Length: 311
Image 1 (cartoon, rainbow, N blue to C red):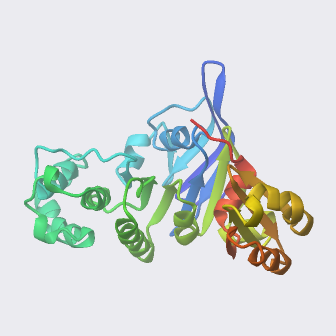
Image 2: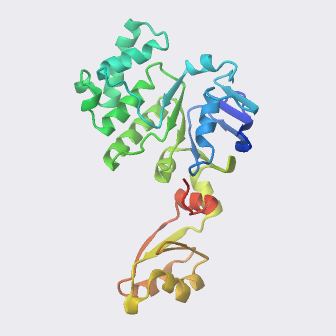
C-alpha cells in the first residue's frame, strides 16, 4: 500500500455474531482521485465506510486515514474529513445558513472563519438566494446540495460520499455530478458509494466491486469493462411476429450468434463482438424491440454479482 494514500485499508475484517460481513478487504485511495466502492445490498460497503471513519471497531486488519491510525486516532482524522451521508440529516429548526454555521462549530472553527466561508459554500451549492430559507421549504435536490456543501465546511482533504444522488431526478443528479467534478479539480480525494453504475463510470478513476464482504474486482472502469465483458450489447424485449417473444428469439437465433445471452424477466441481454447478424435478424422480426449499445460498468457489475434481487 502507498504510505501517502489518503485512505488505506489492509486485511480489514468485521463480524456480527457468526456472520463475517467484511472479509479481509484491501484497498487504497490515491490523492486527488474519486474511488468508487460498489456492491449490491448487503455486500459490506456501509460497514467498510463505518470502519474507515472509526465509527465501528474492526475485528482485524489496519486502517490509515490521512496518516492517522483508525480507530485509535479516528477523531483527529475526522477533523480533516467531509461526510455526505446516504440520508439527509439537516436540522429542520434552522435556516440554510444556520445549518452550515452550527455544523462548523463541531470542528471548533471560529465563527468569524465560518461566516467568511459560508458565502462560497452557498454559491457552490447554488443556494445563495435561499440562505435564510428553512429546510422544510427546500426540494430534494436543494437539500442534497446543502448536505454536500455542509460536508465542506471544514475544508476537508478527503470526502466520503454515501450514495449522494439517491432519490434525485436526472437534472439534480447532473448538478451534483458537476459539483463533485469541481471538487476533484480542487485536488480533493473522494470515496464514493453508489448504486448508479453510470455515476461511477462518469466520476471514478478507479472502482472496487464488493460482494459478500470481499472485493472481487478493482481497476479503472474502462479496463474492467474490457476485461470482463464483450464490447457490444443488444437488449431484446417485447413480442415479434407470430407471437415470438424475446426468450423464444434467443433460443431460435440469439444464443447461436452471440457469445453470451442472459435473461432477466422478459428481456434478453446478448453480449457479442459482432452485433450485425443479431441486428439483421431482429429487424426482420417486426415488433420485437431491441436496444444496441456499448458495454458498460453496469454489465460488469451484474456479471460479477448476479442479477438476482438483493434485500
